[in-house]
Image (cartoon, rainbow, N blue to C red; front, side):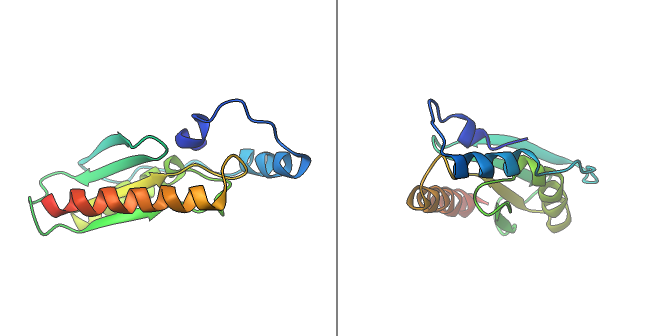
Amino acid sequence: MGSKATKKIKNLNHSKSAQTALDIRAAMGSESLDISFAVSEAEIDLGDVILEKYAAENTLEQGNPCFIYYHGGDFYGGSALNAKNFCKKLADDCRGIVFAVDYRMTPEVTAKQLLADCQKAVTYVSHSCRRF
C-alpha cells in the first residue's frame, strides 16, 4: 500500500538518495485484522490530502469524540490505509469519528508542503467536527 495523495504526483525524477527512501517505503506496512463492528468508511479528497473517515454507527450529532490520525513512517513511508483497521477500532471503541490523514510524502514534496497538508487536514476536521 502507499499514499493515495503521493500517487497523484506525476513526472518525478529522483536522486539516488531519494530512490533509497522509496525502496525503504516499498518494504513498509503489514497486514492487519479488522476487529471493529459497525463502522462506516468514507474517503474525502481535499486535493493534495485525502482523509479516510471512519465513523461508528449510531453516533450522536454532537458530543462524540473526533480524532485526527497521522500515520507513522517519518513522512516518507507508510500510509493511512496501513492504519485502517486500527482507526476503525478506535472509532468503534470511542463511539466517535477518526480521520486518517493520507498526506503527500517526501521525496516527492518538501517539508513545507507536508506541513501544509497536515494543516489542511486540521482545518477541515475542525470545521467538520463542529457538526458532530
